[in-house]
Image 1 (cartoon, helix red, strand yellow):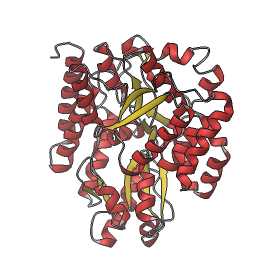
Image 2 (cartoon, rainbow, N blue to C red):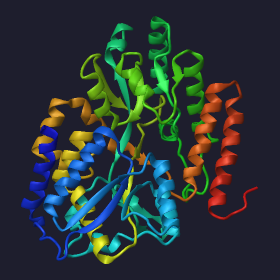
Image 3 (cartoon, one colour):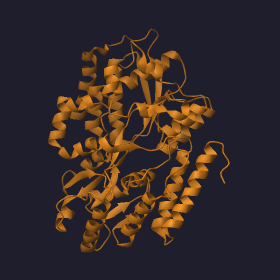
Image 4 (tube, rainbow, N blue to C red):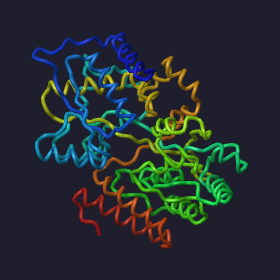
Length: 432
């Protein structure tokens, strides 16, 4: 299979670059675990990547363990820590990693990254796209690097070109106001809403940025929801609902992807990694494309950079070193290019864009360049302790916004108060 061959070639490229093939460890390989969130097609790609790593490092064996979605995995890791049996590596958002760090469970990556023999060279570090490495360096952990780039993606807009063309539109919307106009025309022509929307927190954070606002203050101790940008974002969503453009789908499902695949949706907002699922479900009928996440009129482009990182838990020097070898391998130029081509996640290194196979892939599928180009204006979500709880408050507020007639101002005021209380509680502060 072509994709499987890509991982074989990636492993070969790492070897030819001088990484060297390690001899099996005396007494057998070092066995470590990696708890993750991937399913189906991407899980198979991860298995292939681990198999490629085993060919490079026969002295290490990684057991992949599916831990559910991010919330379920977070709970599973906490249970593992309480029971004294954490994984060796786990996928984590920064807001999860800081909780693990506070329990004394995480291994700092600073000395591994800077190791003169097995670390990253200055050229390696400069090759990572801006901000990806530094994102793992958490201020609330004293600036220690606790996580390493793994599955990075950006929020984008997927558009059904056939539905747009049938209503007289040549290109996908560039702004939310344009999406409202196009969506209203398409929905009226078809007699039903055309924009499935789950109301997840990351999409709302993207809208805040795209409306010219922010998500949190400088030290991430307060949310920035009850702001002009928040009122604009919530106002756009309510208008989309009231004008018959938006319809709710169940959060944490693929109902929106399924609607898009069968031609019942003109637009969906999703991570760039949804590309692979859509390609399998749609092929090219109906015609579709990927567009940059819309901004509000008069506001610069903005989107969310998200996706989990990997962290290493404290164990033994040999297991920690084995885990670092995988992180280094997975981020290598050939490997990150092969991973991006197969899954829709973004490569983490700029040099991946110069890989011959990846260049050909982007030339053959130009819509897949949009997520890469979006890295230039992508921004991460907050990482401070307590933001996992805030995400739930935000999603509840969106459900209230789209499910009733309460004033936007009242919803945002309540949301701001609840979010700040959750953040204060996480810091051990009594909020008013």
